[in-house]
Image (cartoon, rainbow, N blue to C red; front, side):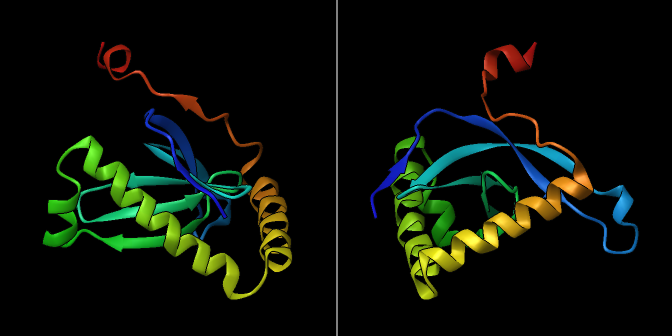
Length: 135
């Protein structure tokens, strides 16, 4: 599977659910980079103590990478961060291939239906303009 990391920063939406009160679930906007692995799309969202990697069409977390001092050093600038996200793409291939693409597709379809029934339609992914957002 081919791995492509988009250099553009985008606004994605993550599925946040509350297990105690499912009606309080929502789509939470988050900013990061898209990692395409074959036909699958993921977003890598850096935060203070980890990098959240979620599937784009469902907003569901696939990986939570702890922000160790080593990873922090590997992601100090944009170019190195994009290289690191390519290596994350290799980990995503392992996850997809662990079962099969047919199984992964089925899981995504089920999760998409489930999330949309609980949270409604996901807002569209869009290119994030840092200068515009700062205003």
